Image (tube, rainbow, N blue to C red; front, side, top):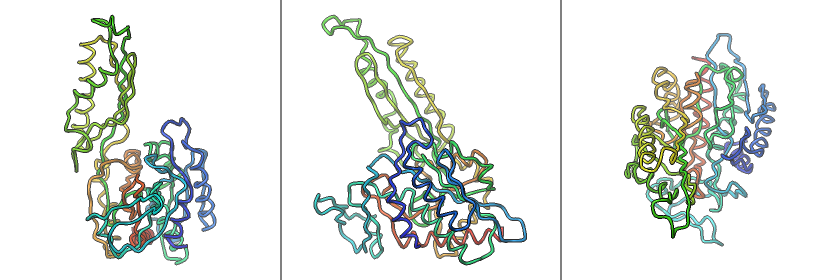
Length: 402
């Protein structure tokens, strides 16, 4: 089966995760794809297991006499809730420039721009404009599985190859239940990036913040000196944060406060934020700023008016990866051997690899050939997915030389 065929098969499985769920995996439909991947790994001859938390583990033992480090290839099964996950209706087109009509009946068009035009002459897999595609991260799964099948068929020498497909990455829980002892790898690579050639080993430090405001309601005609409007105080809280440090006004290594949701009435209001920064010191400063704003409002309106809950999510994996440069070099060498010049840019987000790195498994992130993730305009480039499959296959074969 080709990478393209596998990818089209996997995107037919709806696998959206659910942040509001308390279970692991957060949605049962992720288990359906997990069971299929377990089945395919077993049919290839691997040791494979889908555990109760929705993690798929696979192991291909070394066929070399010498002992080599065990290398893991990792991707996530879930998709974002930023756009519907079904029914996904993909189609493959030869893009020759111009706008792409995704849905003629509903006049849904992906308009040409400089970025899209750069893919002219290539085959793109797109949606009908009503759902996401699922390239994030089923492209990564398809590339790993196809490379693995090619490796087995070639009977080439290789070291221990480990596979892990995780649930719930999109809601920040992808590494929560990973069993590193069961995985048994010395280091790994997540395939969860975008454009061809990308090797990412710098990501945001990340935290979640929940701001709860307690108000006091009385009749507005008798409100003077008594009413404490929680919704207005919530507005005031946000106004005291740096206005320029939001996602739409920051780029590259610049961090931000992102107001994700807000709700409120007179007696109760809630603001939910995510806090991000590549620099650990600046990250800590941002959290302290949130607390300072809460303290200031409590001094104005009463000590129990504003409560703030902060929870760190993950940290910048550069702190770990820079200590094992050989892990990056092996990926870079494989790309160059396949005619692809590697490049790095800081991830303005996070991956399972960030948390896995701090758990003891150095794990940079590799490209998948997908674009416009979390969008109805998401697409994948067939030729680039094939090239990434070749790169992963080379990395698997190179394990015999580590």
